[in-house]
Figure 1 (cartoon, rainbow, N blue to C red):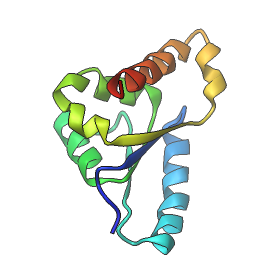
Figure 2: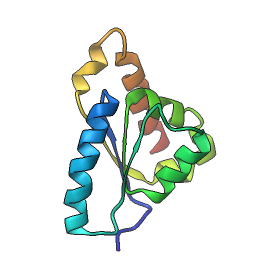
Figure 3: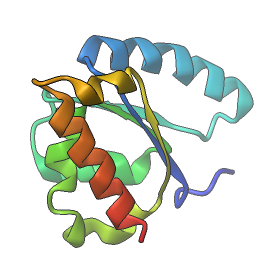
Amino acid sequence: GVSNMRKAVYIAPSKALCEERQADWSKRVADIDPGITCTTITGDATTSSSCYAEIASAHLILTTPEKWDSITRRWNDYVVLLGSIKLVLVDEVHMIGEAERGSCLESVLNRMKAIHR
């Protein structure tokens, strides 16, 4: 099976895009290896502890910049878990220059870089 210590995060600007990708990718990765799990974590997730549990059990995490920002703010408490993320995919990366949401995406990417130093 696939190691649970190697994860990927897909960051998309909207919950709808995350859900669309999950529906597509879940089918595709199941064809490759049924053991690979995908989860979508957006603003609807109830508690932060349930978010960390979902991250721990999934291989591919789909989320929004705002949700990933709130999850990674306390990264020192979850350094091993967040350190298991080996790939960060950003959809609509040009958002980084936008006045409203760009700074959040920039913060998240810088934080992920810091976790892996």
